[in-house]
Each structure stands twice: as C-alpha cells, then as structure tokens.
Length: 208
Image 1 (cartoon, rainbow, N blue to C red):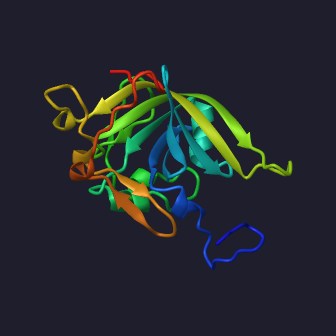
Image 2 (cartoon, rainbow, N blue to C red):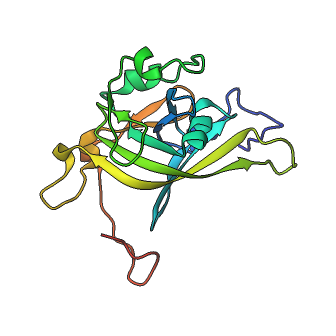
C-alpha cells in the first residue's frame, strides 16, 4: 500500500510507528524567572559525538524550549521502565511555573556543570549547554510548527551500577523505554543485544 497525508488510506497515521522505537529525552530546564520544567520528548536523539551533541524537537514553543533558551542549559535524563509512570505524568500540560517534578512526585538531584537538576531516579543523564533553536519550516514555506533545540553535552551522569568492569555502559541493564506509534512503548533489554563490526575501511571509525 501507499500512504500519504492527502489520501489517508489508514485510519491512523503510521509515521510514528515507522520511525520507531525512538529514545526519550526527559528534558529539565530552568527559565529566567527560576521556574523549573520537566518534559519528555520522543523526537530526541544524539546528533554528534565529537563534541557530543543532542537535539529535541518541540511542537510549538513549549516551556522546555523556552527555558533552555533563557537559561542556556538543559538536562536529558534517561527514562526507564522503572520511571515510566513519572515520565508519563510529567507530560501533563501544567500551567507555566508549576513544577512537573512535584506533580509527578519525582525527586531532583543536582547536576555537576549546569543549573537544571536531573531526575534523581534516572540511571543516567546528559548535562547540556544550549547551542541553537532551529524552526523546522515545511517544504511549502509555511509557518514552522516544530522547533529543534540543539545542545552540547558538557557532563554525563551514569549510575556506577551500570558501568561494567571493562568500562562500558550496560544500556540494557538500565531498561530504557522508547516510544513507538500510537500509545506504544518499547523496552531495551540486555538479552536482546547483539554486536556487529563494520567492514574494514567502511564508515566511521568507532571511538572508544
């Protein structure tokens, strides 16, 4: 079959089910007034590793985007199976200035190099300096509905329990959750992990 936005040959848009599963950027940021925001974004990913950079994409200029710009910093905590309920609660459309941490009964933990705190129960977090916000203007030149926020990672928190004796992070042991389409989520598990090496001379050289 062929699906496009005009014909809508399926009753539900398949896009998010096809670009999936997607990691969740659980973004905390502090605005100019000192208000703290926490919001999960599934349009989130790493976009570079030298230096390390991440992005999240916001539908409209929501608090996380605005506060990241005002404060110049944000933190991406890792959403896991154990923190799934708190992550979901933190997506509630609260009035500006009302804390999602309090609403979702989530504790904060101080970051090392930026002002916004991380989620205390998250096993990992990326502390970021805001670099730029890019309006995602559609092909027809209309108004941008989405805005991509790019940050540079300046520090990483990792729970020592998930660092192996060889110095690798056991991602699967953290059981991160990822977003699918509709109301679907997926869990990453260690037993589902497999390894492949790139052909010699092809692609990027892996960094240790």
